[in-house]
Amino acid sequence: MTLYLKSMAKSLKVLWFFGFLVLGLITTSYAEQKINLPAGREYDLGNLEEGELYQRDFTIANSGDKPLEVKVVRVGCGCTTILYPKKRLEIAPGESIEAKFSYNTEGMEGEEIKYIYIESNDPNTPLLKLKLIAQVQRKQSAAIKRFLSWGLLTVVGAGLIDGINPCAFTVLVFFISFLNFVGYRKRELLVLGMVFIFAVFLTYILLGLGLFKFIQSLEAFTWFSKIIYLGTASLAIILGIYSLYDCYIYRKTGNPEDVKLRLPDFIKQKIHKTIQSASRNKKKALTELAGAVFLSGFIVSLLESVCTGQTYIPTIAYVFKEPGLRIHALGYLVLYNLMFILPLVIILIAGLAGVGSEVFSRLARKHLGTVKLLTAVLFFLLGILLFIAKG
Image (tube, rainbow, N blue to C red):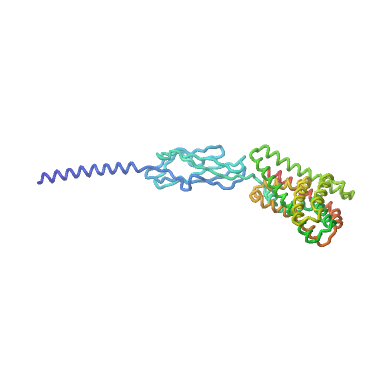
């Protein structure tokens, strides 16, 4: 019996020994180093300014049970430099380090994506890739930033000045005076006048959307896009010079026919004929007349855009190019055209109140020089803003 107990005790010792040996092997096999980036594998650097050198850091942690050896931290471009660690190091289990790097934005613009690569002895992730995302804006002085912050005021001013442009002004004056001449009552004048103005508004919105689409399609062709923007900016400056000349020559002669930037006579005659043919027949029902007037407003807007488009195109190019305005491009387009039709609404209300076309004509002639001067200032402003925005 004693011999048997001794044999059993010896067997139990052997079993315990092998049990601990197996347990140790199992524990050892699961204990390993594990690289971890607590902030994630994407690093948003935010909005940066072009031409600057930035320093940033990120955490490398060891979430395993064995020491983690970080062998190499390298970059995928010359714009990023690793400041720490510059040589291999060891991170104890549960510990972490702050890796530091510099980021040079010289020559960058828009969204930039770069990578940092981390080599370690983690058996599951021997190479870890950290994605860097940055939004880089061109470097601008404080003065230029203030200049570009005039965006809303520029759009409002452009629409208003374009609305008192003699091209648009005289067309509605002729329209109201013709309706009075034919003998429409005030109710009919109000309805037909509002339909005409709405047609003008809608036509210019559609023209603006078409221009937006055209400009957007050019974004894929960088050099061609740059040529178009610079060409538009140059055209705005040239039109500003012509507007200054018109201001000078009109104040010298007092003759509106001497100005250069005006609606060509053949287009003016075509507009008059279009309005007359749409609203001459009083026997038509008001709904029929409204449809004819709407169509005439659409055609007239297309014809007069030869003149009013001189302001419209540079303004749209500026809105689309300036990031702060581009986000709300449709809203600015509507705002511009609301300002554009505001003088037309005022003329309609005055016409309904009995103000004759001769009063509008005298008013237009009296202030034509001032309008030309304001238009010149607007053209120069848009040209400069486009040159700045294009950089």
